[in-house]
Amino acid sequence: MPSTCALSCADWLSVLEPRLIPPLFGLEAVARLRSLAAGLPGDCKGVLEARLAPGAGPVDLSLRLLTAAQARDMAERLPPSAVRDFLVNWLDPVRSIWLEFDLDREPPSVRSPIVCAKLPVGMSPAWIADTLLPALNGQPPSAKQRDLILACLEAMPEPASLLYVFNLQARGTDAVRLEIFGMTPDQIPGYLRSVASGSVPGVAEIVPIFEEVERLHLSLDVGSEISPRIGIEGSYPRQPAREPRWEIFFARLVAQGLCTPEKRDAALAWPGYDSFWTAPERWPLAESGVQGHCVRALSHVKVVCLPGRGSEAKVYLAFGLASG
Image (tube, rainbow, N blue to C red):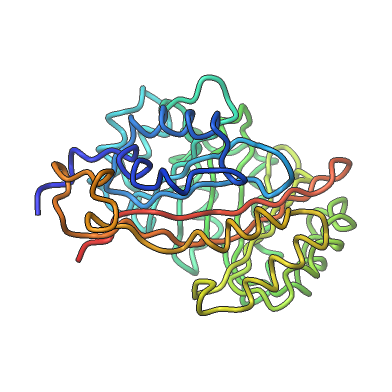
């Protein structure tokens, strides 16, 4: 099989083209995706973030870097920055790095991604505050921000743990996003009451949607204060064809007005795969040969709660090359 080093993310978007259609994908959003993806590597898992509310909306793109070699390759595509330094100097024991590109910004650019570090379970709060964050952001947190971060980590109920930490500088803020894994729905309001009480009323309306949803994540942004913006996401280990609870989950989103029936149906229909044999006219034959599959998977759903602005639901659609 030829080397995949010449592949770009845009090659896989070409393979996916018949599925990049309304209601989840508008023409403008797809054009912006293609423009960005041409400058991104094709050997990484990608995730498309689509809005579930009525009407057209931006579609963001994330890439996962699993190795230091992938991170160095990506760093060569970026200008000097804290993000580039973090990629070049992969910090052990970070397990993977996600780069998120917001396509509602003008123009869409490879130059300024959000960077997210995935952590193993059990990292000490002091290591996170004093080693990870200075490397991730290019500077240590302020004393007040450090104290708030430590307070959020110390208040986590068992068996929850910090899974992801985000550098949000690409969005013009020094806030850090903490994404916590492992809470149950009934633990979330109590936890927020102890660290971000102003967010509790809005979140309490959303939590019932996540009853019996697995792999829950809770995200909050911490700067000089804790933002009232709260994200809750969930998923199941198996895809919809083998997990009927996905349909129940989406039915709740539709009932709450967070998702249209048409977008529900499109999200549930996303999983599958393409190969040279199913899509010969779109397959990047010269770069990847005839082997492998471009696999599509339903990753997760997130609901973002922001007091005064209601809630917004998003679906995350994974894609990427699987060998064999």
